[in-house]
Length: 51
Image 1 (cartoon, helix red, strand yellow):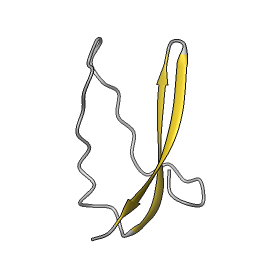
Image 2: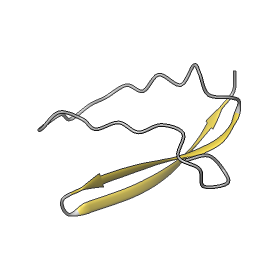
Image 3: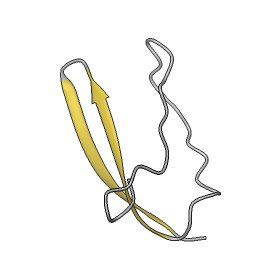
Image 4: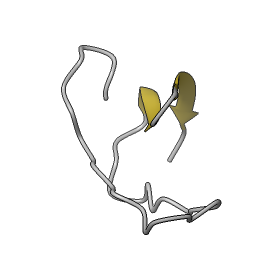
């Protein structure tokens, strides 16, 4: 999500995938939020992109 709540990227990992890399090169500089959702887990982390 960007800083105004618009979804800018969505990724669905493979089952049992523990790590992933997201290509952010197409995103403009700014503040974004990464939401990770699991069966019994939800986390939102803030990231800053500086291109």
